[in-house]
Image (cartoon, rainbow, N blue to C red):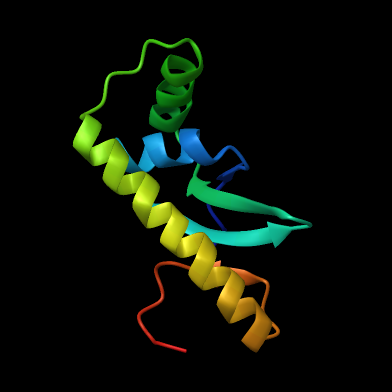
Length: 99
């Protein structure tokens, strides 16, 4: 039996983009009311990255961060469009099939 790994759920768009730019993998998203929730696998590394981010001590490549922001915006917009066409509220970004 596979035990699900603990997850870190964030609604903060820019900290989520920072985690992606820092090399963390987005596990999925879902809508909570009007907010998009970003799901990451929880780890000590993510906790340290978030602590640095919110303490304004994070260092990241500006181009990587800008690209992560663009990618998250695309995910939000495509997820909004797919939610209007599908019943599922959860979008798994690791899934290989297309809908």
